[in-house]
Length: 333
Ligand code: GLY
Figure 1: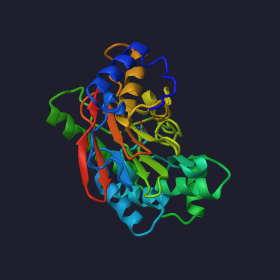
Figure 2 (figure 1 turned 45 degrees about the vertical axis):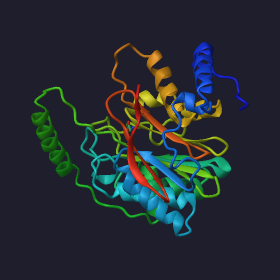
Figure 3 (figure 1 turned 90 degrees about the vertical axis):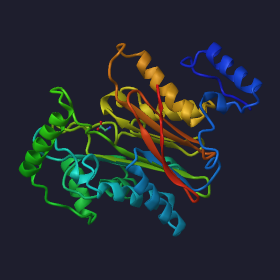
Figure 4 (figure 1 turned 45 degrees about the horizontal axis):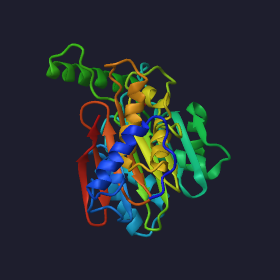
């Protein structure tokens, strides 16, 4: 296998040791970096991977779109619709409101062919922010629209808008938060409230697309934008290599262009699993020891290999092909 030079973040000695051990054991080089997690689906097309267990319903919908003759972008968009409408509390209008009691949504979409992208941020009252992102990509000369401008554009495009009752939503959230805190019996407990959907699609023809959608960090300052709509942070697609998406605390992903970093590791020859792990290790190295980072990456390459990793706790991710649809654990660093 011809390898491009490795970055300084994967020390040469470590790389050589892993490679030597793997090759001595008769494994392929990528296997040395956490590969072979999915022999059943490896090489299968189409293939869809997404963040979290709730991503599975979106994956299944995306597969249906592809099998029905839809494009990879249709699959991304319509797959994400399912989670945006599912009322999970972290994606779509069911999401946790910001500090002013308003739900502000972030989303982006990216196409491997043509390397095009669209995104919306701090978007209010639109049921499917992923559709707004797709229209930004396809119908404007821009990549990103935010706030009221994004909302006006979505309305002009005829996207469904829903009146949100900020005060009621805020009250409901306060009650839910109190219950969760009581259940945890920990006064410092914070409910998980930034579980983003990132969904990556490898089409039957080998082309790749991806999308990302979230209501972002609960109680964020009005106008705060996380990683999810930022190309290279919450999502990145390179049609020559693969795609990656992120979920977790956006501030920690954005400062390192997290998804771009994962894709670049894949470009250097790493298996998607190893690429996710190396990206997290690299970020950890530059942070205060012991700091909770809440970083999670999922990745998919052109060969149909995939992987996921988390900096803390557990990070299930969803994998769907024509023969199987399941949730599996990401690696913990
Ligand atoms: N990852 C979602 C956010 O931090 O907004």
